[in-house]
Image (cartoon, rainbow, N blue to C red; front, top):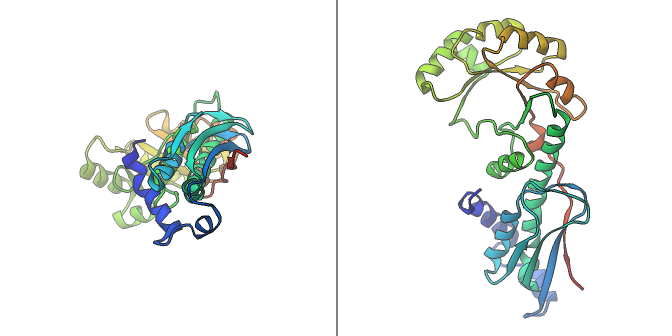
Length: 278
């Protein structure tokens, strides 16, 4: 991920925290010129993501700060592991601290939960995918974190792939018409996917120019039947009711992709702290 991908996000987050006044606590309590060395420490095990993003927060506040990572995005770390060190004026470090921790904590939380799902389906051939259920304004960070956890990205937005859902089908007339219109509009190189809720709807998709079918909220027996119906002529994606407890059984039905919304719309943060050396 390039700095240009996340710079505006970090700058906006700092602006939200500091307004045009700054860190009144630090300005009042910490003597000007005080130097400090802070360590980013994982307080629970997980997968790291967002080190460059966190580092940039310090650069924006004070370009003289030195941020050095001792881990890499995608690394699995134990509790107590040092992830990075930042050195420079204490005032500047404290001013950027919360923004940096918010971003790296969220991104590492997304990566960690993704990795847990990926581990759970190991050996089945199924891929774990994100969805568009991301935090508004943070989508590029969320999707990057999913990749760091070993998952794959679904479409980035409404602009780069077609997913025909129930209301699209109603408005178009039927599934075959919706797929034909979509393919004629976007051409052969853009993915066209159809969301279905029953095997009857799936039968309407098979034989069309759709690339993928999203099997929404189907039980395991129905998923197995759906995979047989497609006979490897179309990529199958399961969605709905996916948890760490259910994901392996879903994968064992033979679906190619399992999409999971909660890894980005409500991920637990990975507990990461910034500790000053005494």
